Length: 374
Image (cartoon, rainbow, N blue to C red):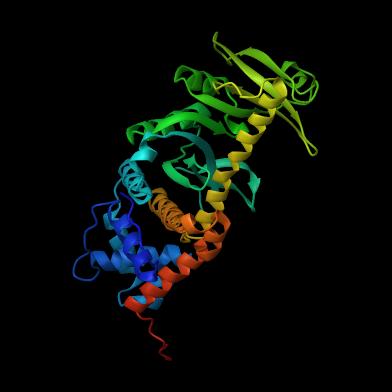
């Protein structure tokens, strides 16, 4: 069962964060210099202060940053093993109840890209120029959407030339390994490929995905964006370079700023009859997908910085940010029975939880408030 605390303190935050991180990997001490407890506290301080390994070691630890870097590298497994360890930590931190494990969840899946400015290295993804670069480290995540809780429960690094349906299949496989029941998936428009729709239909999952326009000509896809507001119709097309055909329902939503075309299927019929109610429901389902965008912004508040080209080390820092965010979700959920959701978040925002963690760790590892002058 999920542990419940009568009082949430910095010591409670530190204890649970260290336990979650320790469960991710079989940590080992590095010689007689870096103990396991120091190594875990180092990584937590990096994440909570959003600082680099060099900056944290110079302030709070007696060993050098070279020693700390070798200690972290000595504990890093390959990418597949690290993914499994981070998934275990995320699932253990969520501490889903028996009722949660019986629930049929709505899942949001999306990809997240971090800009990279260094020399080209394996694992780097190319894309449109953004934030001064066209190279990125990419990650795909799946979030369980609930009215008051959003658990990040699946994580996978993106390899170059990975197709959208392969990303969805990998995350759904991780959810199945955890024994979670899924009733529907909400995706971004980047997943509007025919292979993705066929995958979801074969698995019997409901879905809502916005379709993109194809070019600037008046082709078959772009003609679907013409019509009346809330128009529902069936659409079929052939998968590229294959004889297979995709058939799905679509609804046209003409908003104030832009026109959206949603592909959907598998949801239970709406209680209120009529296509207008079905169109409004699909638009609401897609709006719930923005919960995963919120998780990215929150994760960035607890993500250590680095200039390393090592994709495994970067994956560790990325996963640790999600673990701390998951801990924040669990602790604020304990405040909700007596408070509204917004008041619970105001009582313990994620940035405050990170500051508590920094204060607790800086007490265990006092900073040397002096600098020798040569």
